[in-house]
Length: 434
Ligand SMILES: Cc1ncc(COP(=O)(O)O)c(C=O)c1O
Image (cartoon, rainbow, N blue to C red; front, side, top):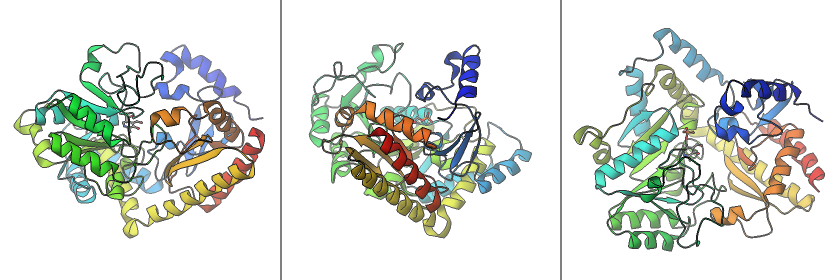
């Protein structure tokens, strides 16, 4: 048995000075307590008890090049000599903006922020200002940050969530004002009729439709054939903007994110996480006429740390790696991730477990279910959560770290040897589950 004695003691101590003992509630979801790490390198994290973890959490997605990637760390170290934050323009910002406009589908211009949460807020404000409409349509199970305006119906209990074809907007946290729900319309995902119906129920009121183009947070479900294009068309027909939240999929499922992968271009898109390989950077990219409202209509967006020197340096260095040899890194990740997905599915069959592997090679989720692959939040919620938790714990015991939902993020540092080691560990973990 692995020992987590030092993490447990540190957690008890930390709780006395840091509210709840963590800096983000997401970190409570850890076994047996929120673990304390001292170092990350490549595919591995090292905790205070001396346990080594092959890490598939990767900071919840950003560490696309693994932990402490040398080219990025070196670039950031060099940038420190230039200072840290000017809260003013600098040439690295221009260089990065130009590069992103070249790389990202539909990015006529970009604007930098620091966290995905804030960039989402900016995109929603832009949509409302541009269309002069009040409401945003979001989907059940999709996560767009923790604010009053977005932390709605992210994981609603089915007792509260209303009928599947017309879900009720449910506040996901105490402390959110009821008024926050008034301007949000919630629909089930992967269902065009639901979007059509939402537009029909709120004629002329919906400013934008925001979605994770692959529903990663709700179950790594892919969009059905024609779904994204269908939503795209419905937005056009109804005068609303399509907002793709590519905070996870951006720079992960390919250089052009999910939009390039699925051939659909949003009016606005939000990126964060992998873009700076783990340094804090987010951005909104999109149509010039919409983004110009920042200047023309005086739409407010601010942020002291936006465009800070180190995040710009990190992103420029990360893009050097991601773009090298025409995206060779993505081709490697794709084949290794596929081997991992197929290997896990084969192990599930070997151990006679109802294991289902769903998603894309660089980001997927494992489920325990005998039902069809989840296509939306309600399907995913019906899968066996206790088995997922047990799998997470058994994997951790064997040195493999996935989150409690058993989402798997891949990095370029997860090479063939790491994948083989992971599958051997998963074999032992599944033997215990049975
Ligand atoms: C799809 C999506 N959007 C937005 C966010 C919020 O980003 P951040 O945590 O950087 O505020 C997240 C965070 O996990 C996310 O997964």
